[in-house]
Image (tube, rainbow, N blue to C red):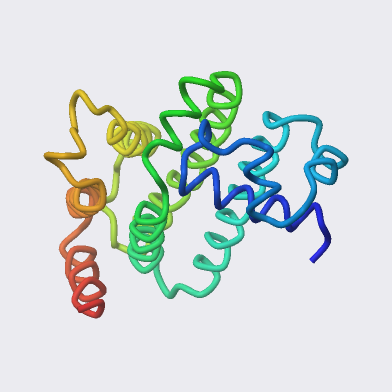
Length: 202
């Protein structure tokens, strides 16, 4: 693994697990066993490093989603696979990461959120249409509206004034929102398929 990729992988894990503010360039260098000079030879500053880490993380997520779609037999399998991936990611990410990003790096936050929201909208609209063809999702859904409701509902998880982490554990909240929403747009066949896949996990 070349040094730049090693820095991206290591720094990305540190940002996600420990929060962005706490992770300084000195801290990254110490944890990765490289000189700070080496890091600055590849990244101008912490902001550039953070942005590159996020781009790498999102690219890997896109690749994982692509593989999921290729290896799934139907849309509900993609949905449940996305649920599993989301639960796994939530368990690994320190909530402070998103708070630090939004408060201290608003330009990156705004840019990344806008890009991801656009991609998620497109992906979910495609899944809705395909799911309707497969008789998994109800026919005649307003796909743009349904996709937007789903994405905004997921984004609302981060609002502590609504969902305090102490009262509503993030993993349970995500699963509840995801499964309830999926059931609500599904046909009887889709609900049966959802239950079959969820049962297979236990």
